[in-house]
Image 1 (cartoon, rainbow over the protein chains, first blue to last red):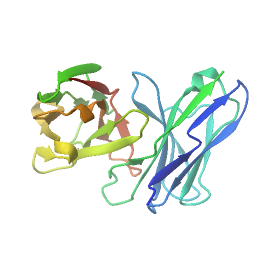
Image 2: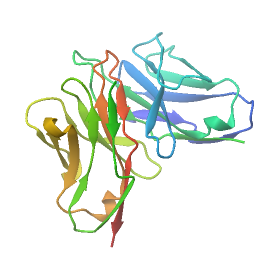
Image 3: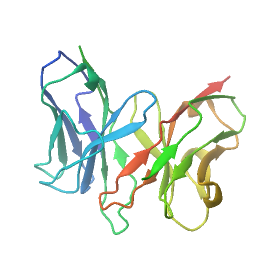
Length: 115
Length: 114
Protein backbone atom coordinates (compact mmCIF):
# COMPACT_ATOMS: atom_id res chain seq x y z
CA UNK A 1 0.00 0.00 0.00
CA UNK A 2 1.88 3.06 -1.27
CA UNK A 3 -0.50 5.74 0.08
CA UNK A 4 0.15 9.02 -1.73
CA UNK A 5 2.86 9.00 -4.40
CA UNK A 6 4.26 12.11 -6.05
CA UNK A 7 6.35 12.24 -9.21
CA UNK A 8 8.86 13.59 -9.90
CA UNK A 9 10.70 14.08 -6.60
CA UNK A 10 12.99 16.81 -7.94
CA UNK A 11 12.90 19.04 -10.99
CA UNK A 12 14.73 22.09 -12.26
CA UNK A 13 13.02 24.30 -14.82
CA UNK A 14 13.88 27.42 -16.70
CA UNK A 15 11.63 30.45 -16.49
CA UNK A 16 8.77 30.13 -18.95
CA UNK A 17 8.86 26.34 -19.21
CA UNK A 18 5.81 24.28 -18.38
CA UNK A 19 5.50 21.05 -16.48
CA UNK A 20 3.03 18.76 -14.74
CA UNK A 21 3.35 17.24 -11.29
CA UNK A 22 1.56 13.95 -10.75
CA UNK A 23 -0.08 12.77 -7.56
CA UNK A 24 -1.51 9.28 -7.22
CA UNK A 25 -3.29 7.78 -4.21
CA UNK A 26 -4.37 4.19 -3.73
CA UNK A 27 -6.64 4.71 -0.71
CA UNK A 28 -9.80 5.42 -2.68
CA UNK A 29 -9.98 8.90 -1.16
CA UNK A 30 -12.49 11.37 -2.53
CA UNK A 31 -10.62 14.55 -1.60
CA UNK A 32 -7.23 15.56 -2.93
CA UNK A 33 -5.12 18.69 -2.43
CA UNK A 34 -2.04 20.45 -3.69
CA UNK A 35 0.03 22.60 -1.34
CA UNK A 36 3.22 24.55 -1.61
CA UNK A 37 5.64 24.84 1.29
CA UNK A 38 7.92 27.82 1.63
CA UNK A 39 10.26 28.62 4.53
CA UNK A 40 8.48 30.24 7.46
CA UNK A 41 5.08 30.04 5.79
CA UNK A 42 3.84 26.56 6.53
CA UNK A 43 1.74 24.92 3.84
CA UNK A 44 -0.53 26.95 1.61
CA UNK A 45 -3.33 25.38 -0.38
CA UNK A 46 -3.07 25.85 -4.14
CA UNK A 47 -6.02 23.84 -5.49
CA UNK A 48 -8.13 20.99 -4.27
CA UNK A 49 -10.68 18.49 -5.53
CA UNK A 50 -13.70 16.96 -3.84
CA UNK A 51 -14.12 14.22 -6.42
CA UNK A 52 -13.38 12.98 -9.90
CA UNK A 53 -13.95 15.69 -12.47
CA UNK A 54 -14.10 18.53 -9.92
CA UNK A 55 -11.49 21.10 -8.90
CA UNK A 56 -11.51 24.29 -6.86
CA UNK A 57 -9.15 27.14 -6.04
CA UNK A 58 -7.33 27.33 -2.76
CA UNK A 59 -5.40 30.15 -1.16
CA UNK A 60 -2.69 30.65 -3.81
CA UNK A 61 -4.02 29.37 -7.18
CA UNK A 62 -2.49 31.90 -9.58
CA UNK A 63 -0.08 30.42 -12.12
CA UNK A 64 -1.28 26.85 -11.56
CA UNK A 65 -3.89 24.60 -13.09
CA UNK A 66 -5.14 21.20 -11.97
CA UNK A 67 -7.08 18.28 -13.32
CA UNK A 68 -8.75 15.26 -11.73
CA UNK A 69 -9.73 13.01 -14.62
CA UNK A 70 -9.43 9.87 -12.51
CA UNK A 71 -10.31 9.51 -8.85
CA UNK A 72 -6.86 8.28 -7.93
CA UNK A 73 -4.87 10.99 -9.75
CA UNK A 74 -4.55 14.73 -9.23
CA UNK A 75 -2.31 16.67 -11.60
CA UNK A 76 -0.79 20.08 -10.94
CA UNK A 77 0.36 22.08 -13.94
CA UNK A 78 2.61 25.10 -14.21
CA UNK A 79 1.77 26.87 -17.44
CA UNK A 80 4.74 29.24 -17.55
CA UNK A 81 7.11 28.69 -14.66
CA UNK A 82 8.36 31.70 -12.70
CA UNK A 83 11.14 31.91 -10.08
CA UNK A 84 8.46 32.71 -7.47
CA UNK A 85 7.15 29.19 -7.97
CA UNK A 86 10.34 27.67 -6.62
CA UNK A 87 9.04 25.65 -3.71
CA UNK A 88 8.35 22.21 -2.33
CA UNK A 89 5.00 20.92 -3.49
CA UNK A 90 2.95 18.45 -1.49
CA UNK A 91 -0.05 16.44 -2.50
CA UNK A 92 -2.50 15.12 0.08
CA UNK A 93 -5.71 13.13 0.15
CA UNK A 94 -8.56 12.60 2.57
CA UNK A 95 -11.67 10.49 2.93
CA UNK A 96 -15.13 12.02 2.71
CA UNK A 97 -17.37 11.72 5.71
CA UNK A 98 -20.14 13.63 7.41
CA UNK A 99 -17.84 15.74 9.54
CA UNK A 100 -15.89 17.13 6.59
CA UNK A 101 -12.75 17.22 8.68
CA UNK A 102 -10.85 13.99 8.41
CA UNK A 103 -7.04 14.11 8.54
CA UNK A 104 -5.11 14.45 5.33
CA UNK A 105 -2.50 11.96 4.14
CA UNK A 106 0.57 13.43 2.48
CA UNK A 107 3.04 12.43 -0.20
CA UNK A 108 6.77 12.97 0.21
CA UNK A 109 6.85 16.13 -1.87
CA UNK A 110 8.31 17.45 -5.11
CA UNK A 111 11.18 19.91 -4.85
CA UNK A 112 10.92 22.32 -7.78
CA UNK A 113 13.48 24.97 -8.68
CA UNK A 114 12.84 27.59 -11.33
CA UNK A 115 15.92 29.30 -12.71
CA UNK B 1 -11.35 33.61 9.47
CA UNK B 2 -9.51 30.72 11.01
CA UNK B 3 -5.82 31.04 11.75
CA UNK B 4 -3.09 29.17 13.56
CA UNK B 5 -0.07 30.67 15.28
CA UNK B 6 3.02 28.79 16.31
CA UNK B 7 5.06 31.39 18.17
CA UNK B 8 8.30 29.41 18.32
CA UNK B 9 10.19 29.11 15.03
CA UNK B 10 12.98 26.92 16.42
CA UNK B 11 13.39 25.09 19.72
CA UNK B 12 16.35 23.09 20.97
CA UNK B 13 16.00 20.63 23.83
CA UNK B 14 18.33 18.06 25.32
CA UNK B 15 17.70 14.39 24.69
CA UNK B 16 15.63 13.01 27.55
CA UNK B 17 14.19 16.41 28.47
CA UNK B 18 10.51 17.26 28.29
CA UNK B 19 9.04 19.16 25.38
CA UNK B 20 6.17 21.55 24.87
CA UNK B 21 5.40 23.13 21.51
CA UNK B 22 2.92 25.96 21.52
CA UNK B 23 -0.04 26.43 19.22
CA UNK B 24 -2.75 29.08 19.35
CA UNK B 25 -5.74 29.13 17.06
CA UNK B 26 -8.40 31.59 16.11
CA UNK B 27 -11.81 30.16 15.42
CA UNK B 28 -15.36 31.03 16.36
CA UNK B 29 -16.64 27.57 17.17
CA UNK B 30 -15.20 24.36 18.53
CA UNK B 31 -12.30 23.67 16.23
CA UNK B 32 -10.93 20.51 14.74
CA UNK B 33 -7.22 20.55 15.61
CA UNK B 34 -4.27 18.54 14.38
CA UNK B 35 -0.57 18.16 14.94
CA UNK B 36 1.60 16.92 12.10
CA UNK B 37 5.30 16.09 12.03
CA UNK B 38 7.61 16.44 9.05
CA UNK B 39 10.97 14.71 9.03
CA UNK B 40 13.62 16.08 6.65
CA UNK B 41 12.80 15.27 3.04
CA UNK B 42 9.51 13.68 3.97
CA UNK B 43 5.85 14.54 3.83
CA UNK B 44 3.69 15.34 6.83
CA UNK B 45 2.58 12.60 9.18
CA UNK B 46 -0.38 12.96 11.52
CA UNK B 47 0.63 12.83 15.20
CA UNK B 48 -2.78 13.37 16.76
CA UNK B 49 -6.11 15.09 16.33
CA UNK B 50 -8.80 16.66 18.48
CA UNK B 51 -12.42 16.72 17.41
CA UNK B 52 -14.39 16.67 20.64
CA UNK B 53 -14.57 15.02 24.05
CA UNK B 54 -11.56 14.56 26.30
CA UNK B 55 -9.35 17.62 26.03
CA UNK B 56 -6.16 15.61 26.51
CA UNK B 57 -5.41 13.72 23.33
CA UNK B 58 -2.88 10.93 22.97
CA UNK B 59 -1.02 10.46 19.73
CA UNK B 60 1.66 8.36 18.17
CA UNK B 61 5.34 8.30 19.19
CA UNK B 62 4.51 9.20 22.79
CA UNK B 63 3.12 12.66 22.04
CA UNK B 64 0.06 14.21 23.62
CA UNK B 65 -1.73 17.53 23.26
CA UNK B 66 -4.16 19.42 25.43
CA UNK B 67 -7.01 21.52 24.11
CA UNK B 68 -7.67 24.59 26.26
CA UNK B 69 -10.65 26.55 25.00
CA UNK B 70 -10.13 29.44 27.44
CA UNK B 71 -6.63 30.00 26.08
CA UNK B 72 -7.37 29.06 22.45
CA UNK B 73 -4.41 26.74 22.66
CA UNK B 74 -3.53 23.21 21.60
CA UNK B 75 0.01 22.64 22.86
CA UNK B 76 1.95 19.51 22.02
CA UNK B 77 3.92 17.74 24.74
CA UNK B 78 6.26 14.84 25.21
CA UNK B 79 7.73 13.86 28.58
CA UNK B 80 11.11 12.70 27.24
CA UNK B 81 12.37 13.46 23.76
CA UNK B 82 14.55 11.18 21.65
CA UNK B 83 17.06 12.21 19.00
CA UNK B 84 14.66 10.81 16.39
CA UNK B 85 12.09 13.47 17.35
CA UNK B 86 14.15 16.14 15.60
CA UNK B 87 11.80 17.38 12.87
CA UNK B 88 9.42 20.18 12.02
CA UNK B 89 6.06 20.22 13.73
CA UNK B 90 2.92 21.79 12.34
CA UNK B 91 -0.26 22.65 14.15
CA UNK B 92 -3.37 22.87 11.99
CA UNK B 93 -7.05 23.73 12.31
CA UNK B 94 -9.89 22.26 10.31
CA UNK B 95 -12.24 24.64 8.56
CA UNK B 96 -15.57 22.83 8.80
CA UNK B 97 -15.69 22.99 5.03
CA UNK B 98 -17.17 20.21 2.98
CA UNK B 99 -13.73 19.55 1.51
CA UNK B 100 -11.90 18.94 4.79
CA UNK B 101 -9.61 21.88 4.16
CA UNK B 102 -6.99 22.56 6.81
CA UNK B 103 -5.12 25.72 7.72
CA UNK B 104 -1.55 25.15 8.85
CA UNK B 105 0.65 27.10 11.20
CA UNK B 106 4.09 28.15 10.04
CA UNK B 107 5.78 25.31 11.91
CA UNK B 108 8.26 24.85 14.74
CA UNK B 109 11.60 23.23 14.03
CA UNK B 110 12.78 20.99 16.85
CA UNK B 111 16.46 20.24 17.35
CA UNK B 112 17.73 17.74 19.90
CA UNK B 113 20.92 18.38 21.83
CA UNK B 114 22.85 15.16 22.56
